Image 1 (cartoon, chains in turn orange, blue):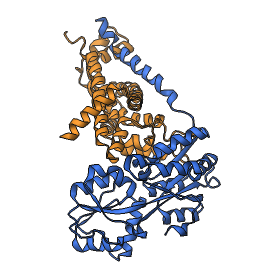
Image 2 (image 1 turned 90 degrees about the horizontal axis):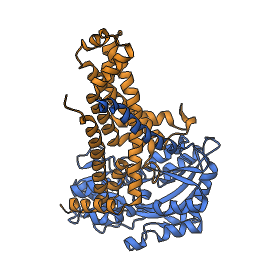
Image 3 (image 1 turned 180 degrees about the vertical axis):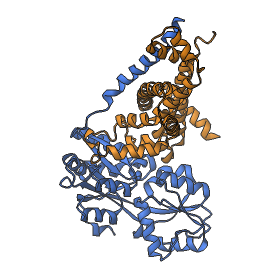
Length: 232
Length: 285
């Protein structure tokens, strides 16, 4: 009980006093996961649309592979990315291991299947005749894709939120490829684990509360955008 | 309606702005940054948070600290993935040097390991003079013992002690393996009221949370010695040899040693580490 109260007070204190390290850590979390989400949204939605709107042999296999990817364990991604980015590994010349960029790469790998899988589901849940209807009204192919995307924008937003939620809360990959370096690649999740290990439960608790608050805030903004013109 | 059209592009622009902020954050590696692979105890005790900023200020290097177990840190050295290693697993260090993966192994500091357990002390080890005898008592009483089991320096020492006690503990019900760092293993031990071996630094920095007591200490076999090793650049050309040397030199310099000596005195009432630069290995035991 004491711990919870202490943690809450500590969190409040850290936020109110604008603790520079905590702010930097929070900002980095947002930057890394925001960028990773952006990249995975670009890849996920565009590729997802191609997959959902075209027919090709093995389509079901591809979609199951993507759906499997939605549950990709972050540590597995972390391990693979680490091995590739080692100085003496295949991509070692990029000098990316233990940088925020490496964390972005790992998080893109985690978030892309989530965004893609949910986008495909979103498009496939539209009435199947809609595509024909739009085309028969004289739309070009591009206009048809754009109209379908607009129709699916609510679930698309959900896909973006799921992708962001997946990476901002992720720890396994971040700690492996980022290294939890103070002032450089330490984010909220990795800092929480470290402070727990150090027995600083109050700070760990405070960091978790800040993380929760951050996720809530971001999702709130997304939800506002998503729900803005609901009535139809 | 107009709003509807703007949604997705608006979000994308928002995210793009975020992206623009980050890209500069991925810096190209230059020879100003050093990768230090070290044990969790140096980070968890807070020593590095004093030592590294001081070194960075003096030298202009940026140190990227990767805190893992000594076993993993040495492995990173073997693979040329780190530049300099600060570890406490003397035998494994010797092997890494003998195989030519690291050079210039130098003594930095020591503290000691302690055997901690609940104040009730069901295995009756309090005050025993030898770590080996304490483990024998724990095994005889079959009380819970928590092992790091993560190839860390602490784990290496623990295995050595079991060997000295001529006991095989693998698979025993009372011998449990956490696979976690020192801090977390101490937490588990405290929750389950078991015994474990911890470095004094981490124990002291967690003491107030734990309710575990030091029951056995002062045995020479519980000495915890830290060395710094430079990864061999002749073997791994990508290693920042100059930076590694600068950092090692700093650790054993009077300035670095002074920081080590005074660290923790204010907060814990006693030093957590004792500087040893320049001493001979043999004098330690």
